[in-house]
Image (cartoon, rainbow over all chains, first blue to last red; front, side, top):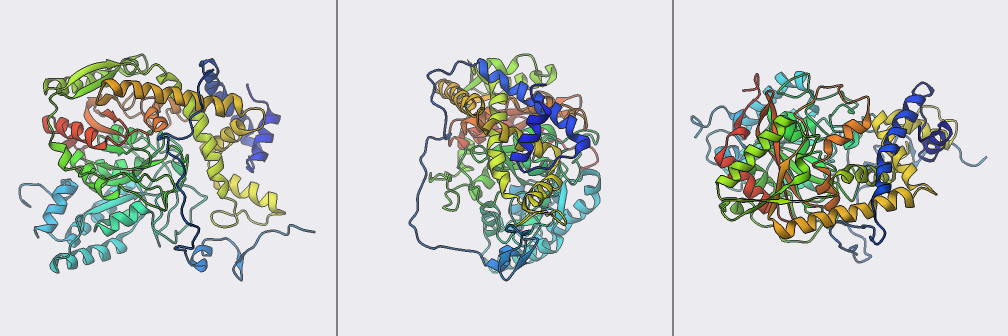
Length: 95
Length: 491
C-alpha cells in the first residue's frame, strides 16, 4: 500500500468527505493503486520542460468591469436546502 | 421522400430536418413517434434520467407553427437529447448524481440555448457516469445504461446515455461532453459517430465542470454529416465562457465534399502495440486501407509518450476535479445531510452522502496530488509530461493532416467487468486521452464489428481542424455502411 490509513483520513478531511467505516479499507486499497499507477510519471525525463498551462497557449481574456446580465436571486435560491430572507442558512458558526 | 427513407426513427437528423421543411411530416408527428419509442425501449436501456414529453410536444407545436408562417430556423422541429450535465432551465440537471438529484437550473447552457434557437426539440436528459467521471456508465446514481447491441455490456461512458439513445434510434442525435474520451469511446462502443471539438471551440457555459482544462462539449449522431450540421450550430465564441475561443466558424457541411486524394493520414506506431484487441486492430487496419484506396496516403508517425498520457490525465483531471467539486457544499444547492452538528459536519456528511465512490476517489486523488509536499512530484510533473505529449502531436501534425487509429482498445466490455480495479477502467481511454491533454478535435466513426459488437475508428485533427476530420469521416462513410448498422430489436 502506498498510502496509509492515516494519510487517507487526512486527505478525506482536507476534501471534506466523510467516508463510511466499512468502506474504508477498500478506499485505501483503490487510492493506493491509483497513486502507484500515476507514480510511473516519475521516470519521465522533464528537466528542461516548462509545465503546460493551457492547451492553446492563450491568455486569459478580460472584460470591462461593468454589470451585465444576472439571474434573479429567488430563482437561484430555489435550489438551496435552507434559506431565509435571501440568506443561506447554516449551523451556528460562532458560540 | 417519406416512403423511401424508411420509418421516421431510422432517419438521420439531416433527413428529418428536410422532411419537416418539405412538409412530409410534422414536428408533432415526429416527436410523438420518438416519445413512444422512448417509452417502449428505455426500460431496457436506462438511457434517460428525465423524459421531457410535455415540453417536447409544446416545442414541436411551435416548430409546426414556425413552418406554416415561413420563419423556420435551420433545425426546425428536429429532435435532440442532452447529456444530463448541460443545464436546462426548468428541467432537472442531475449529472447522474445523488448530489444533484433535485437540482433545477435557473438557466440554459449555451449549447442548449443555441440548439433551442435553431429549432431543435429536446426529448429528454440522458444518463451518464456521475459528474462524467467514468468510462462505462456504471458510476451513475441512476444505475448503468445498457448497450443496445448487447444488454449485458456497457455502452461506454461517460456520455453513454446519449450514445445508447442514438444507437437505439430513440433520437437522431444527442449532446455529450468529452474530458478524456467520454464522447468518442461510447460512440465507438455503440456504433455511433462521436465528435469532440477543439478545446474552446464550443462554449462550456452551463456545462457542469469536471476538469476545466480538458472538458469540451460535442455531439453523438449516426452520420458525419449530422455531426457537421450540429457543430455549425453549437460552435462559436461565447463571452460567458472565459476559455471560449473567438475563431471563425466555417461551413462544416460544405467542407465534407473534398476528395481524399492527396490527404496524409498518420498511423501511430504505438496504437498497434499490445493492449489492442486483435479484432479491433484488424477492423481499424481495414478502414485505413479504405482511405488509402481512395487516394489518401498512410504515413507512419510516432507518439512516443502515448503510454504516459493516462497517468498524466489521472493527475491533471482529478486535481481540477477536486477544485471544481468543492462548490458542492450542502449550502447553496445540492444534497444536504440532515441535522448537522456544526458546519464541518454539514460539509463532510453532505458530500459523503451525495457523491458516489468513483467521484470520491477522484476528489481525493486530486486533493492528494495538490497537497503540500506532493504538488511538485505529481501535479507539476504531470503538467510537464503533458507538455511532452503536446509536443509529440505538434511533431506529428507537421507530417500529416489527420491521425487515424482505434478509439478504444476493445469492443464493449461486460457490465461489472472492470469495476473492481479503477486503473483497468482508466486504461480504456488510452487512445482518446491524448486529444484532451493537447486540446485537439477528435471523432469516432463505426468501422465494423468484433464478436458482433461495434468497433470505432478515431480521427484526430490539429487545433480547429474539425472540418478536416469531419471531411475524412464523411468520405469514409460514403464508401462504407457500418454507420447504418442497427442493433437487433431496435430496427
